[in-house]
Length: 149
Image 1 (cartoon, rainbow, N blue to C red):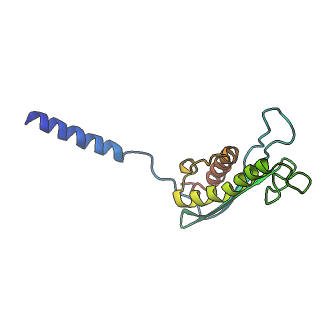
Image 2 (image 1 turned 90 degrees about the vertical axis):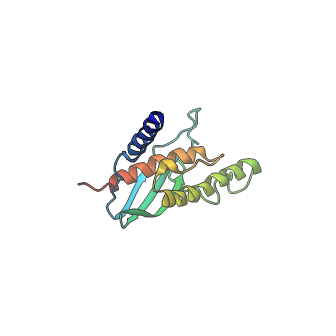
C-alpha cells in the first residue's frame, strides 16, 4: 500500500512538472518580414545558394499566413527557371532537384501556419538548405512580432 502511495505521488509530481513550462508566446497582429543570411557553396563560389525571405501574417495573435521565397545571391527569385542554364535544362537531375527545393518553400510556409513554430516544421530531403534559411528567417520575423508586455 505504501509503495502505491509513493508511486501515485510520484506520478502526480511528474504531471505537475509537465504542466510547468514557459508561457506561450503572444504575437502582435500585423505582417512581418525577415531575411535569412546568404548561404554560399562550400567551395565559396559565387553561384551559392542565396538567401530566403519569409513574410508572416499574425491575426488574432496567431500565424494566419506565411510565404517563403528564395533568391539567388544576385537577387533573382528562384522560381520555375531555377536549375536551368541559360534558359534551358542542361542537367535534368540538377533541374529536378532545384525545383524540388523551390516546391519545398511552399510546404515549409504551410507547415508553419499549422504548427505555429518554425522548429516544428520538418525538413524535406533535398531542400535542407532552404529549410535552414526558412527557420532562420521565420524566427527573425516572429521575433519582430512578439508582443511587448
